[in-house]
Each structure stands twice: as C-alpha cells, then as structure tokens.
Amino acid sequence: MGILEKVNYPEDIKKLSLSELYVLSEEIREFLLYNIANTGGHLAANLGVVELTLALLYTFNPPHDKIVWDVGHQCYVYKILTGRKEKFSTLRKFGGLSGFPKSKESDYDSFDTGHSSTSISVALGFAIARDLNNKDYNVIAVIGDGALTGGLAYEGLNNAGRYNGKLLVILNDNEMSISKNVGAIAKYLSQVRTRPKYFKLKKMADRFVTNIPLIGERLYDLIRKLKGGLKYILFPGTLFEALGFEYYGPIDGHDIKKMCEVFENVKNITKPVLVHVVTQKGRGYEHAEKFPEKYHGVPPFDIETGNHLIDINSKSFSEVLGDKLCKLAKNNRKIVAITAAMPDGTGLSRFAQIYPERFFDVGIAEEHAVTFAAALAKEGLKPFVAIYSTFLQRAFDQIIHDVCIQNLNVVFCVDRAGLVGEDGETHHGSFDISYLTLIPNLTVIAPKDIKEFEMMLEFAAVYDRGPVAIRYPRGTAKVVGIYNPIMFGKAEILTQGKDLAVFAVGRHVSILYDIIRENNLDITLINVRFLKPLDIELIEAIVKTHKKILIVEDNTIVGGLGEKIKSIVAEKNSSNLIKHIGLPDRFVQHGTVGELYSLLGLDRKSLKNVIMELIKN
Ligand SMILES: Cc1ncc(C[n+]2csc(CCOP(=O)(O)OP(=O)(O)O)c2C)c(N)n1
Ligand SMILES: CC(=O)[C@@H](O)[C@H](O)COP(=O)(O)O
Ligand SMILES: [Mg+2]
Image (cartoon, rainbow, N blue to C red; front, side):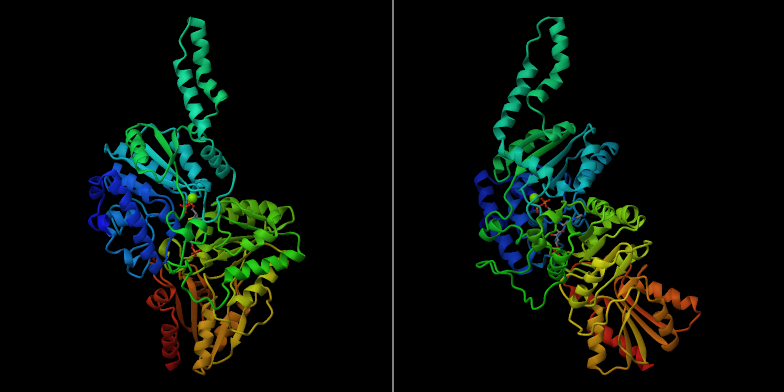
C-alpha cells in the first residue's frame, strides 16, 4: 500500500502527480476488496467510483465544499480519503463506521443519506443557503443513473433548472441500478453514451449557429428568432439542457485527467451544470465486473472464488415470496408483480423470467409503484407490490390516497420489516406496523415463519375485500411447525398456560415458542397474525384470564401492537400487569441483528429473563 499509506485527507491527494493518482486508484481497489471481503458491504458501486472520487477530491475542497452522495452506498472511497482509512475495518459493524454518509461521523459527510434520489434537492438547498448566507463554496451532487429513475430527482432538477448560481450535478452512469437499470431515461442515457459522435456534431452545430454572420437587419432578426430553435431542430438538445442545465459529457469516469479538467472548467459557472460520467460498476474485480448485481451489496466473501461466506440453511422470506408467487400466478392470470428496482432483493427475479409480461420493475419509484398498482387493481388485476418496509415509507400517501380510500385489492409484500442489521438507521423497517395499521381498509398481517408466509400469500391472493399488507423480516425465521388455518382477523394460540400471556409478532413468535417449550413454562403464547384488524375478542378474553401480559414486537413502541393492546386493556379498566418490549422511540444504529436485539432486549436471552422475572412474582 505505498501511496495509500501516506494519503489520509484530500490535501494529500492534491500533492500527487497524475501517475501517482492512478497507482493510488489501484491501491484503493485492493484496500476495498480486502476490507469488504471481511465486513461485507456495497462493493461494486465503490469499485466503480474510485477515479471519480479522486478527481472530485483533487478539484474540490470538502468539507468547505459540499459533496452530496446520492443513496450514499458508494461513499466508501470518499470515507477512506477523508480521514477514516484507519477505521475502515469497522465498516457497518456495531459501533463502527456507517456504510452511508453520516454527518455525526465526520464533517466531510455533508448530508445523511441511504434512501435514493435526494441529492439534487439537497444540493440545491445547500446552494441557496450559501447565497442567502453570503458564503462561497461549491456544491456537488453525485447521483447514479439508478437514482435518476426516482421521481424526487426530477423534482430537484425541475426546481434547480431555474436557479442562477453555482450548482454541479455529476451523473454517475454505469448502466446499473442494483440490477440492470430500466426505463425510458436509462434508454435515453444509453443513446447519449453510444452516440458520442452525434453529440460532438451537435456541439459543432451550436458553434455554427452562434457564429452565423449577421447580414442585414431582417436576416439578423430572423436568425435571432431562429437561433435558439435552430440548433434544437437540427440536433435536439440533451434532456438536461432542456431542463436548464449546462450539459458536459459523456466523459470517461475512469479518466482522472479528463475529469479534473472538466470539473476545473465548470466549477465557477454560475448556473446549474450537469457532468455526465460513464463508469463501470465493479471495475477491477473480475467477479463484480461480470455480475455487478451480485456484488452490489455483499456479505463477507472469498476474494479468490467470489463465493459468499454465509451459511444459508433455510429459505429467506424473499425467496419464498418469489417461489410462491410463481405458483399462484400459474393458476391466476390476474396476478402481476411489481418491484421498485429490487427484483433480486425482493425475490421476484424468477417471476420476472417466467412471467415477463406480468412483471414490472418500475425503477426506484415506490410512489409510482403503488399508484400504478392501484390502477391495475381497479381494472381487475391482482398486483403484488414487493417493497422493503423502509422504502415503502416513501409511498405512504399513495397507499392511503390511491389504494385504501378506494379499497382496492392490492397486496403489499412489505419485506425487511423490523431490524435489518448492518445498513442501520436509514434501512431498518422500524415503523411499518405503526404507519400501516393507522390506515382504514388496510388489512395488515405478519407470518411467524416461511410456511405461514406461504399460507398468508395464498390468503391474500384470494382475498377480494380490499388491500392487504404482509410484513416479514430480512432473511428467515425458525420454523415453528404448528399451523392453524388463516382466518380473517383471528390470532393463533400456540401454547396455553396460566402464568403469563405473551403476544408476539413475526419472527419473535418462534423465539418465544422455543423459550416456553425448552423451559416447560405454563404460558399462553399468541401469534398475533392480524395486526389489523386485531383479534379483539381473543385479546379481551386473555385480559380476563391472565393477570400478566407480555407484548413483543420488532417495531417502534410508538403506535405499534403494544399500544393497541394496552388501550384495549385500559378501556376495560382492567388492572393487568403489562410489559411491552419493542423498538425504542429513537433511531437504531447499525450492527448485526443479533447485536441490536440484545442491545434492545429483543434477543432470546433477554426475553427469557423478562419472562422468568414476570412469572416469578
Ligand atoms: C428509496 C430507495 N429505494 C430503493 C433503494 C435501494 N437501492 C439502493 S442503491 C440502488 C441502486 C442505485 O443505483 P445507482 O444510483 O445507479 O447507483 P450504482 O449502485 O449503480 O452506483 C437501489 C435500488 C434505496 N436505497 N432507496
Ligand atoms: C443501498 C441500499 O439501499 C441497498 O443496496 C440495500 O443495502 C439492500 O439491502 P439488502 O441487502 O437487505 O437487500
Ligand atoms: Mg448506476
């Protein structure tokens, strides 16, 4: 690690020659590979932005200048070069560096991100604040072609296009979202990329029109009128020019010299500028170059073979969704599946292969996905919309306004509900029980394990009295082995006893079931199943027969299951002793799910202690 050893901050980079910068870029790739093979993380995107990050740090001066990374999963190189190299082995680990920009971690991280398509709005806000505060710094948004499929990016562009100050947007175009990028914009970018000659010609046309000699008054007027329009008639401008941006590109995002030249030339232009750089996702690591989607976010892996180093001995909920939906779709031609840029993560890739005409990857567009599904349902189709809990937050209004008010038969497959682990606070599915159960008409259910998940998918496929949301966690849950038929609005009693009643949701059901069985406890365990409508009849009966109640949920305690049960108890003026364990009313950091559960009292050991304490007295 010759050069990297001596480089810690942007000022160290500015001292390097061009050839040293290239050596450094290779050293950084090795460093990334070695570390991410141990920690896991977002490998491919970071391998792709090594030169881009070097060129940015060579030209600009963060933290004075503000660099805003869209999504933020590609900020590792930036972290390494802004004082965090020594801590890099702690990436995504409990107490260690975050995998995303975090302003509390470093002043160099200008804005916290994790969800897509925010960077242009943030950069415009920074730019206007700078002007109003009479300050002078550069603002640079770095947005990927995938993030550019998100509607928020266009809200930002629309607003920024009429701004008259310094604002630089760098479009990092690698033709990939997590999977292959999709949609009309992706197609447009591909045309821009593959027709550089066309764009060169267009530039010549610009120059030609600008230099037409002014012969005579009338011709002058005419040309003046035509001038603006003429170049667009001959050579239509780029989309970004039409939106009010100066456009530069496409340029090679691995050519440090070229990027430094362009950034230097545009950095003082007092209008919005978009520089389009073309990069290769996964660059420099054979496996990631070949399969960038597999190395987008990776668990620890073997560098030589590229094999992931995790023991998977049970199917994940996402895989079950994919398999089961394929089976259900075979007999029901009305079933369609929708993903917002996560066909692999949500398990829908196989469905996409088998039923391409009934599968829709809409890009990073959760709001659109939900409204689109609403219209499909209105016309009699049966859409299954698979979106991670944290990203579905984006579509809260669409769920209410477009689906639930009209009581449409949309099925929401709410993946990654509860804590997700290493991605941390931007990605935990901490809120869905609260934000979904407050919506009228929406049925909200949660399976205890993958077998019950299949049953719930069957139930949702035939349920035709309104929308259904099924929430389930990342990965899997231990199989319980008891399965009563799913009945609308009914909970499931798994064990009967008199010392304590435990209400549990999702994967905590099996943890509690094991505790009760292994310790031969005289406890009633209720698998809540229906978070909405709640099984009020059963809850009221339990309140009467059990003095002590424990409620366990992998959701914020605010507006979750616990509050609902407590209010039923309060209404009955009953004096039960109630203990409620859920996620705290604060954002939960990153770490393994196991570490976070023990921190928050949701792990097996803590739960057993609580139970023993409760039944002792
Ligand atoms: C609102 C939202 N939806 C989905 C995601 C999941 N996600 C993270 S990165 C990504 C793809 C981003 O593609 P791009 O911006 O081109 O970056 P690249 O990885 O190609 O560098 C997606 C879909 C997210 N972070 N935020
Ligand atoms: C950056 C981002 O938002 C995604 O890449 C996310 O990290 C995927 O999470 P899973 O690994 O749970 O699919
Ligand atoms: Mg991309």
